[in-house]
Image (cartoon, rainbow over all chains, first blue to last red; front, side):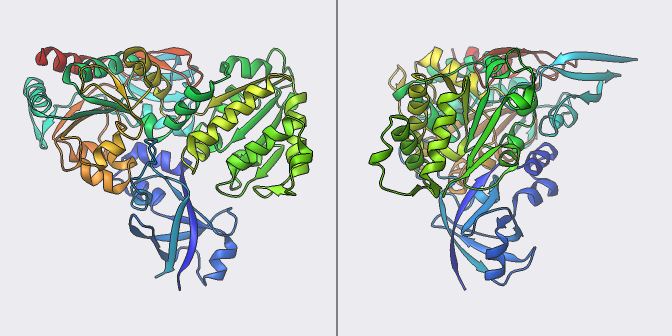
Length: 110
Length: 424
């Protein structure tokens, strides 16, 4: 069962803590390789805390655990980092800035 | 014996907090006080022990590494110089000199964060102020598309929300805080008023605020815009016009979403128009410690803030054309020098894979995902820890970074200077 969401990426305190330990550290990987979803959407998709989901955009796909976040229904959040960047396209719309937010994402429980 | 260094500067983010206390014992940092959790690692996880440079992962002498870097850059038809934002002004200046000498493209991390803010201020101007003015005068704070509660942890206490200022003697009680975002955040929980807008509607909301400011409420037929009732937007306009000194802080919720510089131009124009009623300023929440300095130095040296090509022998500005992600994604760079940045971690994955295909030279105090793939790595000193230098705070105030440890590594500026001299 696929569902379409909008994804934004951004900074978190845990991501900052992890980067000081090294971006190839387990702490950084755990801080950035996850997605947050509203409790309503988690229930609607029949998911539980920590279940893995496949996220797909036109740029790529990743599989990450899902956790409850304080988000409106239909919106996802991922900490900035290499995992989220697999979903980000390279078209900067002539601005230089890639689309790190406003990403249309297909979510599939795995 | 313990030596205490007061008023050290944390250069992790654009706040550049300059009240840090560092205790040094036997040449090592033993304790750091007043620093936030985001910046603490800059002092506690940096090992200042000298390390040899590497070529393809093999340790070499500094002379050999310089020679290899020079050869890579000299043989390239279209080299890229990128990053700069966590380096000090002195190194940034030298990097741009190298770009000029090489006929290279030079771009900073601004292009992936607040580059679009630069485009907006070039279009409509930027009514701005210093953080000292915010602290002492501001009685209305609007945080739009930014979350300093996660990214700039001492901003609230040092500059904006809680400090007692000359004209805000009661601190938090003298200020109204508004947050505008698509989701609740740590910042919205601190705010008195939270406007949760629908994703992708910032431009419409800002245009509506401008319309209401011009007294044209009768011309608005919608009952709500971006999910916010018109009455609530009118109340915000009333609050904005009746405050003594308002400041809008904005972040990547605007710079990286659809509309980008057009949306930011709308906010900057709203702020400019508010000055017909009261005093109002806008300030981008800059992320890297000296990304504001990178904009300054690029503008001194080239005339433009980012995305510049020297290929014609003079600086040509081209966001979208000479910005790093565009250049590398299109396969137009055949070598890269990365100064104090980690594009492998922070670029779109396809662009990062493209960077791995070309010889890359990296200057960085710490290992990173980019040093992992680099052809030549120079482990340089960390400004603000074992090296001095100048950085610009997010309000464009220059701050001198102090060294709290004695330096045994070369600085970025010294390495770049040796490369420039060898190129001559």
